[in-house]
Length: 408
Image (cartoon, rainbow, N blue to C red; front, side, top):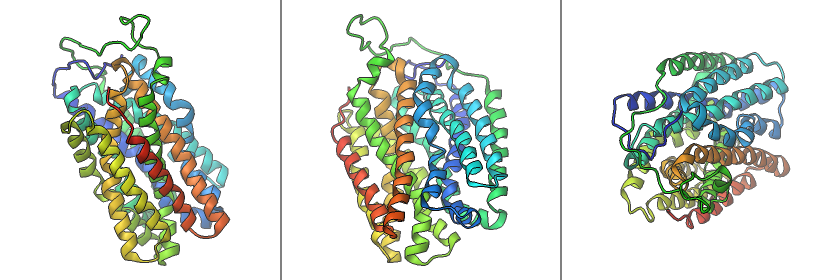
């Protein structure tokens, strides 16, 4: 059974093993998500895809999250994050290998859907497993390190993927990462240690008003307005960046007349700084005053990103597009660890797994909606200006909601 991260855990060396295993798991699921953006030009040419189909291939990896993220979050307490993460890697590998042999759009979509089920199991379960090994005062920092694996996936899946595809082709690339997922699955199951040793557990008081001694129910957690605020902000942050990963290379090919590999590399600049800024954002949020430390690291970066996303769509100048990408490369990432920490702190400790599952659910909804809407707006208008206005407005709204988050 997974252990509550709010309990006082002994600082043992295995916590770094857990963090390392989860880090690579996040890396592999992120590559699965983001690599499709660099593959889209080749897939459009080979399968004659239209805009909504290209967007759908990105969102197929997120659709299962809408249905499964919350149930998976609940199951973490029963089966443990390590075990569920291992199953996720198995499904991730199966989806990628199926994708590598697809011969039409529908098989591509089904393969992405299968991989998407794996993605759900590779997000919140390893996240809950890792945080259970770290004390509360290190929560933001630990989460920053963990999600820097997602940053690494952006570097590979966006920045370097164009060059990888040029060398190997999209089929061999998908097969290669599928095999890597199988290898990491074996290591995840071999770890065997699910829960850390505990020193004098001291969970938060129950939120159950009828019987304060009873832990709160999932139904009560659904009514937690602060968790919903964090979830809405996360919906915007992740959904918009998924739209960026899907459409940025294609936009730059059209607006800046760039080659495919060059466009993918420029789009990937936003991921180069992700690792240090993920970690820095979590570390800073641990050290600011509790009353506003988490939320200021959410709303301010999100509002700055709103301007950056708009510039990408309307700019035909390389210097402005590059400036926008640099802003995204800084401010999109510093908000992530603080958002997860705010979600965990919004609920009773017994429901931390549920909170992570809920945030995965909201990010899945955003990641399904945003790329498809951006593709639809491009199909309807024939330009990318309106496509990028949509995520800019969404980022603005997400930042405003984050302003109202209150720490319990």
